[in-house]
Length: 475
Image (tube, rainbow, N blue to C red; front, side, top):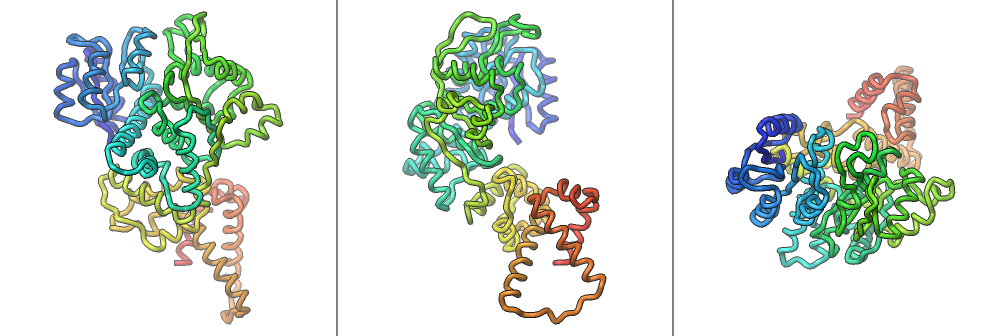
């Protein structure tokens, strides 16, 4: 569990924020002064400090400088009731992850905290690797895998080629397009590029374009001035301005509206922005990395994506292969995720049984790295032995593997032309036909149980029970 220190001289705010974060599985300590906060930090290790800018004995800027000097592995977010853009930019340049204006909104503050901790972990990993005698390629290969959990370097040819491309483009200022299926770890690759670039000490700001509405996109990208539109209760810094000097990562960029694409094109070309409601231009020095699981070429042909913007982004492109194309690297991923799960859950699961390993290498992983990580975490939680066993895996994975094994056995049997000597009664024949029908449908829909149940015209629970019965029958 991650540990957070709240520093705010308004006791009620500290108390409310503490209760909210505890409900969201954080360990929280609160204090009301800068001096007591530094005392807490000297005795305990914190992942993040949420610090009010105005304190009785100091201010947020002084606290930020002290924390970064004495405890550089701790992330810092500054909270204030006063909106000051120049100060916000200065604090971010000094090392603060973000500068948040009160009132605090639960979903927004939780998302910011999670992103801040994730970014600090990646930076800590980079700095740790930089202090060793490993060569540059080995250092880059390991710098984020232990904590971000999505970028793990393996030994397959696909993995080696991916690492080669990352190391080639990282030292440049090129804009990069990352393509690949959902769940292949595009954000982690973007972080790896950032951490191996001259901008590594500057902000890395990630933005999910898939969740943006047309109305909010302009404000999120460029920021706005207080009173510039209905509901603009305070001045907001946009993501471009937050990332100034560093890297801006735009995920699912293909989902942006055509109007916002036009505004982005002007920003990328001119390297300047204006906050909504302002006439002042702000100079930008931002590296842009975008990601998509769509074919942008097709989107251009259908008029959904601007060709000129595509070419602005496409100074370099990297394709992330699905995990099913990375061979035994699947077990490298799985082992890494097991180490992380042990740390998270305080367990000591040492590995995977041979049957589980076979399942992992046979299954097609439609959810890619993200699906594998979740499967390992769930299995580690339910495992009481030294090894994860087959029964700890979801049914769709174990059933898929068994179906593949049966197909291979049937194929071998046909090749040898060995007839079956065992007669089947009517009940056995019916069960076998049902078994084959269920497996065929499951394979067609990549073992999506909801879709399979709909095609088979049964409810999901009935399908689950039948899968369980099949699973038991073949044990």
